[in-house]
Length: 423
Ligand code: NIG
Ligand code: FE
Picture 1 (cartoon, protein in one colour):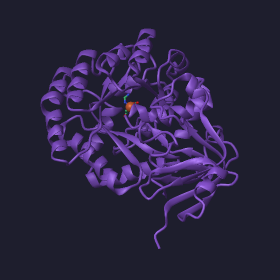
Picture 2 (cartoon, protein in one colour):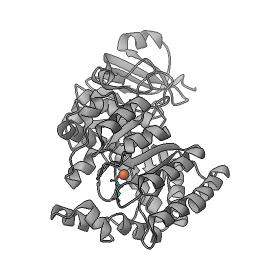
Picture 3 (tube, rainbow, N blue to C red):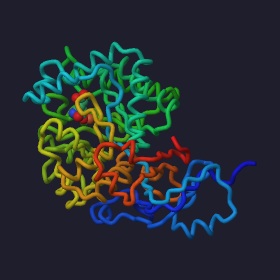
Picture 4 (spheres, rainbow, N blue to C red):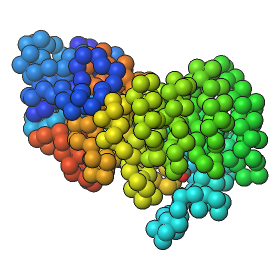
């Protein structure tokens, strides 16, 4: 006989809702006082959506006599929302372990890039890889992210830098949507670097008159779902003017603006993002005070990437200044061949230690605020009825263990649940 509901998680020691009043994002005060239930239970329906979250007693009486496809006893354990990774580059072939050695020996990111390595190295390997090989690699990486608690992941193209390979990457991302459980937000990042043999002006023209029109056609035919547009706005890559033209063209197609800015040099990215109505800007190691103010006013989220600053030994992004100014701060892993990290718990740990965020701030940054940066905070990022039933159950008596214990998440995270199913 059909059961009434898909999943009952009962008697958890703590349930971190993150927020409970339908907030689309949190700023500093809200991030510091997350909604937590002590001794609670969760019910998820057959539609994969959260049906009820509350104290164990109230859920027990509300669902008295109901039947469930699956019951998980979470006694002594904690429940948190599925984590959201707001920035990844997960489709590529050919690792760059040799460049890690060069960087450890003192080479800078741009020195490696200008010598034809870095993104260019990965572009060469990705252009010649088959879609099957790229899909297999992507599925493996999403699987690792899932085991570390990520249930919604932003995935960029950007290792093609020409139409054919950019479309190949987006098609691979599209195929991954149908073949594994992690929810994906996809980003066209054809302006990730100026391809070898072209000037920035020629690359911009190619994006505007060749790549974006072709992308629009694929989307219109229903072959691709693309959510966001990204540009690497950086000295020696795309300047502010080209960035503006490309992002505007993407916005005209209905894409969310979510771009790389102020990573190595101040580029006035905060002001540009505010002017364009950007949903998010990533990196921001070199953002100015004016840029921070512009982002706070425009409600443009800052997607901070502590792995990059850590690996490249950059000045960490000024998370505290942004939080104090009222910016919506999110976090991403920046998974890519430069920053080989699939783990948002590790990212939170780094954010706390090197960017001086508190643990509640870090958790809000990888849940509701990361969801906001992807325009998904109406469906993801908190445990509120009606949202997607994505959650983690960790084998620890307090939720902060997810950040405190760095490494070994396979032991700590007992269950990852997406749409009410254990995955
Ligand atoms: O976000 N900075 C630009 N893009 C990536 C790195 C990509 C790569 O090095 O392959 C980033 O860190
Ligand atoms: Fe990136």
